[in-house]
Image (cartoon, rainbow, N blue to C red):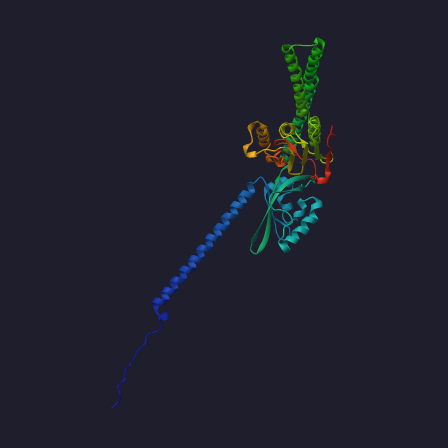
Length: 417
């Protein structure tokens, strides 16, 4: 009897079945369609971007020039033709150096070759000032910015150049106008100083002298007569001194640090000599000078006078040391004495430091007062020169280097005049 048998029938693999083949075909078609749409969209974006660039380039008032890695011009816009005087066909394919002065051509070629090899720039690519050359050989001032891009594996460089001839002419006209106004202002200041000195100052001096003459001619006077004449003489002398300060501050011939330091020396010499106070005053030598305009010069001198008067009246000192100097960043005044000192925290309002603080603040400076009872006083005034240029509050540094410590003249006690 034969053994029983079972017959088995197997179907084809699933990837051979119709439904899988249909699904794979549909998926592949969808992917191809999506790729085609993405490529089409990307081409449209690139095309639109290129169209926008060409539209902007065609209507721009600045010259736009694109070069390849061989420094050959591959694109120019109409503004470049207008600025440089060449036609589109004359520039296309030519070396970029045709638009440069001859002195710049070798430097450009060397710098461009170095940048292609190392990627290091020797100049800024943003709004730099360089000259260009027109077809007729005339040089024109340009403000140029550069950019770089890659297309189809090739590097291109684009420069945007603006002709700034008109702007330079306007700046030059503005500079001349400013210089003319400054010259006229100095002329007026000089005339005012002369009139004040010759008319008002001389009249006040005559009043003071006449009051003294009257006192001597009349002889002995009672108190009711003596006091008015003494007041007239005293007020006249005070006005003469005040007028002298005003004339000095207005006079443009005195707009220098050396004039300010000289007036300081005369003042401290008169005051300290009268009170028998030994002093040393260090000031810059004449070869280290700065220009200081009227109101700053006047305020610094008034601060100095107030500080010296306070020292003489209140400190009861026997020695004083003063220093006045300037470097490229600061103007510094330091006054120290060996007097009785005071408690800064409990400083009475009548010591005159309030007006010194106010004037210092008006100059944008900083004032330090160090003092202790029985240990003297040190007053330090610092004014930042950066905030006081000729066009902003009045100080302009003309020295090229700051003074070193040995560049200061030292005044010996009681010898200064």
